[in-house]
Image (tube, rainbow, N blue to C red; front, side):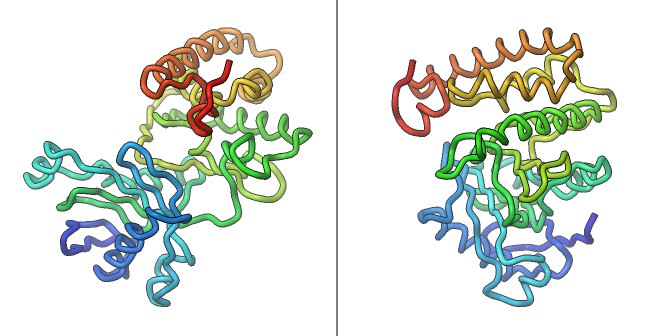
Length: 287
């Protein structure tokens, strides 16, 4: 775990940060994040959550401490009841980011290095800042949501390796509550289980025992929540990698995953009017 310090940022509260980062460094990143939220460097803008790719190279001292040219800044709106709790001494939901990263490293699970995170927020938002990894794309981008998805001939290998990697996490007791295809980054180069990085780690919990079938199925159902045209092929190859071609538990997992997918799609239809994820992104009704 890198050396961390507490940094008070005027108007934003107390942060945990890499040793050497100054209040003005973090303040500049947050201001740039606000500007980037309205442009093409915005990676996500949904339900009060904003994620941006924000430049960190405007200051050489800051760049050296961070270890790269860009960072990913995620901010979420803080409800009024939680703001009151923070003023009474409660910690931000992002406050354990460095500890989670350290525990994942111990388990040899790769994740972007943490740069800073809110400890006791004082504004309307709380933040986590991680290093941007420039050499990868998310599973979502590789499978369907990009101008250049992975070649269809390479898709089975990607999905099988993804399944194998997820099995190793679950067997180690790693539970990601929001295990969606846009929260898994795949680095460039030869595809191995070391090619995968877990994003958005604030939702991670660690269990002393391997995960239950229900938790495994929920994560698998989340990662397989894809366009209808991709679902059958993706499920076949992910489960092959996850359980092995002769593992009888695949059948039980398959049933649980089907139920998880159905529940997710019912909830999406109720919330947005769309059933499948590509309808929601592209704004069209499907079968």
